[in-house]
Each structure stands twice: as C-alpha cells, then as structure tokens.
Image 1: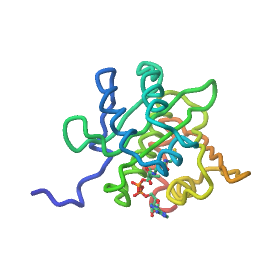
Image 2: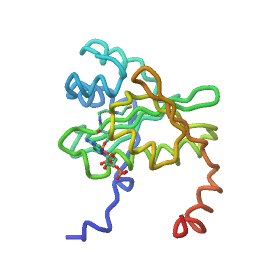
Image 3: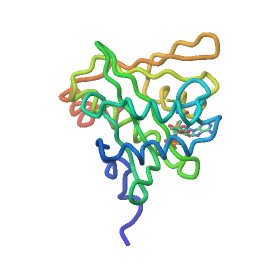
Length: 173
Ligand SMILES: CC(C)(COP(=O)(O)OP(=O)(O)OC[C@H]1O[C@@H](n2cnc3c(N)ncnc32)[C@H](O)[C@@H]1OP(=O)(O)O)[C@@H](O)C(=O)NCCC(=O)NCCS
C-alpha cells in the first residue's frame, strides 16, 4: 500500500458531466436539512434540489468532485461563472469531513478560476458556518458580514502568478 502522506484529495478530483446529473442529485439529496441550509443558504426541499441540478449547464459552469465508488460523490464543488466573479458552492458528506477535502475542493476552484481568467472568486455563506469561514480565512479572502450572512472574495491570481507563488513564496509565507 502506498503511504497516505503522498496522497492529496486534489489528485482524485474529477469533472462531472451531463451523465453525472443523477448521482450529483443524490449527493445533494443525502444532505440533511441543516447542511442543505449551509450549502444553499436557505432551507431547500427535494424538489428544489432536483430543479437546481436539472438546470445546471455543464458546459457553462464547472462541477467537480471526489467519489468513493461509481457515482458516490463524497465532495462536490460547483463553480458558476458570472461577468466578473465566479461563485463557488461546495459540500462534503458528513462522514468525510475534517480530512481536508473541503479545502482541496476550494484550492481546485482557485486553479480552475485562474485558468478561466476569472477576476474574483466569490463565496456566500452563513456567518455561523465555521468550516467554510476557516477555509475563506486561510485563503486570505476579503470577508464582509451582515445580518448573519457573509460574502467572501478572492482576487484570483493568473496561472503564471500561481506558479510563481508556489516556487518563490510558499516557504517564506
Ligand atoms: C464546509 C465543508 C465543505 C467543509 O468540508 P471539510 O471537508 O470538512 O473541510 P476541511 O476538512 O478541508 O476543513 C477546512 C477547514 O475547516 C475547519 N473545520 C472543519 N470543520 C469544522 C467545524 N465543524 N468547526 C470549525 N472548523 C471546522 C478545519 O479545521 C479546516 O480549517 P484549517 O483550514 O484552518 O485547517 C463541509 O463542512 C460541508 O459540506 N458543510 C455543509 C455545506 C456547506 O457549508 N457548504 C459551504 C457553503 S457553500
């Protein structure tokens, strides 16, 4: 067996396509009411989720994740491009949380947004959501909070800048 320390969630990330719509829906439907509220910003029922997934344009937005078996998505990121910003929504199943998958999904979004030429990465979340707040803070996102909700923005470096950051600044940060 290879040592776990050489593994990284990002290496396991796959892009979802049209044919993954049903398994994507299953991922969201498996979230309980509290998690659905955290993920979508409001309490959503099954038909709302089915409509949301049914309306995803897989050519326009970028859906990606890590799965445990065929169609069993442990974590999902959905990057939705806007005119200047791309919005990221992410979710990890409860039994896989706390092992860095959420942070890996976030990191992948930064790379993807950079490749797409996105200026800013945006996340909207409830201010009580400590896990996502921690991810946003670790990334140095600019966070504004009001009325129990928060918006976080990250100026997305270009791909060249990201490479440069890794080569020259990682060990000094
Ligand atoms: C938010 C979410 C994706 C995080 O997934 P995860 O795989 O547990 O995240 P990680 O293991 O990578 O942890 C990320 C950070 O959050 C912290 N964290 C995780 N769970 C936490 C908790 N319950 N309370 C406080 N901090 C927590 C970790 O310590 C880590 O912090 P660090 O970067 O400073 O080390 C997951 O909790 C989730 O799916 N929640 C429901 C949906 C949701 O809230 N989506 C976000 C809004 S779009």
